[in-house]
Length: 120
Image (cartoon, rainbow, N blue to C red):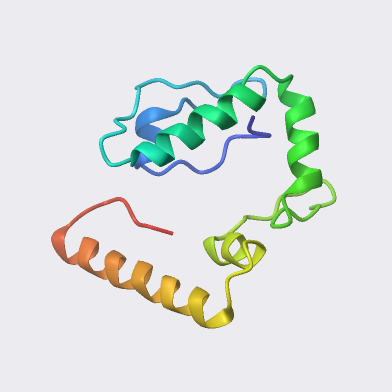
């Protein structure tokens, strides 16, 4: 579910997920799972089995309760960054800094090679 349309950039999300319509998004092009490990595919299956049929609004309420990286924006919105997710996942400051450094390096390489999809 998406509250409103965000500024869309061409990238993985827009290649595979529709723009929001009445709080709903849809898969428009099935992404490949060629880079996922068997364990990752199993985890996705377990998560879908548990939450995939849940009422979307109830799911949002549940996720807002259980995901520590989400902060109540009081009617607005607050982007959730990769460092926010890593911090919520109990990564140390040094680990977060190292991961952010790797992402920055990957983005530099992507820009040199002319890739349009930035890793955030």
